[in-house]
Image (cartoon, rainbow, N blue to C red; front, top):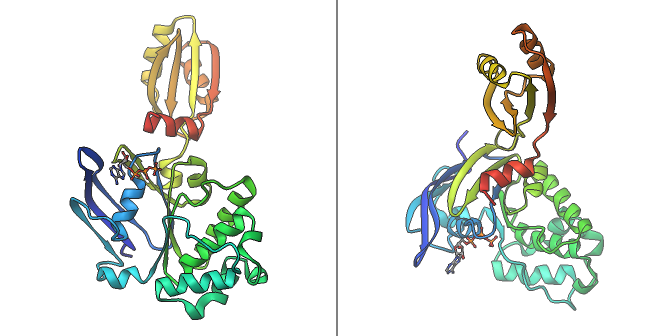
Length: 296
Ligand code: ATP
């Protein structure tokens, strides 16, 4: 299956600031794709480019395997900035204004309100809505015209925990209904909880991309000590499944393949005539891995 969005070697500078450098990746159809990176890493710039709001200095992108950009754009709903809804108008009437601005979706408003779970509140004034409901209405405005793809920039920014949960549930629901979703976020937790795929940006460069469970899988570490540390290190260099050995404070830190269990390391050492005085499994959190990756 061809990717729904293919980005090839995109670079963008703002004067002396290199916001993106040679960024390439594909977004598979049907996924929830997270663009993850610290503030200033180039996420919004990248979304602006693929939505034709900004011009890249180099590189290219194609939607739906090469569809003409203006035609493709009609199949994409985007929420880059929160729309200015009128506080004294109802949800339904606010969507009328959004549909008029977009020049599509006027007959689509009730469907959209159902889709984002606001049908029962369609006649309530915007000012009576919770933060989560306001953001759901904003996503509703992006869904006018029944797009195949939804692009969201930091969709949970500024929301309280209840609002964040509402938006996450909505993203999962919309994806189940068949919408491919692209989210830019600086929150690892957000990407890990809702995304199937991720691309990690740091200072405009792509560090890693792929399925979330491959890119963000946590690597466990095992700590070992024995009386003769040199003999221990030499022995462990022979053990398959150990990817890295580092000596820190008279302790060996082992980075192992995921199928290696601590008891197997112990058995291996015993078979080499070494008795371990210390054996400890240290789970590395995703947060730590992300911090290491982005050096943030
Ligand atoms: P944030 O989450 O803070 O919005 P981001 O990852 O979306 O960050 P961008 O907003 O794309 O990153 O910014 C990437 C870099 O480009 C930053 O160094 C930013 O200061 C710079 N930049 C963005 N827009 C402009 C602009 N219009 N003029 C000059 N520099 C800009």
